[in-house]
Length: 458
Image (cartoon, rainbow, N blue to C red; front, top):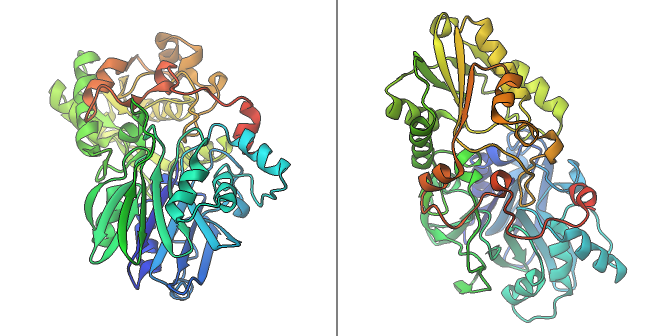
């Protein structure tokens, strides 16, 4: 999962993009970058490892001149976490330059890359995203949107992209609509962002989403749209509502906060906890779900776990060692809330189970009499090939154990998951039109042929 941002028509394009990336930091913490383009076609770029706040000094941003800019925050799903794989991708070619920021995963990138290399293409990274850049460079189409359309023809998998070709800013989503991409207006400028919270921080007004299969182009003449082939059934990622998007965002046209509250209410109906005293969230992504659970169950909502906000998201750390180290310093329990109580802990998901096991031990150490775990999504039983770095089946705890055994493994007195039907009914515009392959095993497309090379990005 990554965050992308683009703007055209502002003399402060790089500064606006820099600000917008702060609101997309939760979507990727490994690297960040900005490319700015002036009307004369000159372009400048800055990319760095780490957080947006760790190196984009004011003097560096001031050097990024131009009325067009795109930005990216990355967490790796294909390709290693190195500066070579930081985005936006930026290359010079016969028509000037191409810059691209990508959210999603291309499931046939290995095959596409092999074909390009056989024709003499030389890659500078192991990212699947670079495949699109090479295909743009090969296009002989006249207009930038036609070049992008030609490049995307035959590309399979998930992509929401912002691209600069020359001085034209483009935005596109794959035909299935897996990843969100919103359009906003800031004065005379057009803005694109993965989530509307990034529009809010820069003062832009939300206009609409880029449609599935659509390519939007913005140049000196204004904005225009080019419709592309859309899947007859959308496959928007339901995990955006469950975990990834910020609660103050709207994605796929719906409120993330309201979706999570509805998931929590449905969870309380399906998985009550008789005799429990209190309910609380694993902060922060489960806060709204716990509110919904408390509302529907009548249990008192408490703050029983305190999160250290100077520690990033554990799920999107690139290595297991990184996740383990972060969990140890990320949470603390409030003994005065927990001692002697039968408690319900609401979380959005269980992946490997290691984080949850540590949290349960923390609660028992603080005196909780009983710990009942309630999860506002179904058991994760399969990997994602469309932009979320869920591991292979052998590392997914629910893929290898029945629910009761998972409960024993993580140390809870009872464990209850939200049903697939309940989840899909609770999210905005459900139950149809969502991808739920990681829960159901119903993949909308063929998984990658070579999983090992797909994970490596090469």
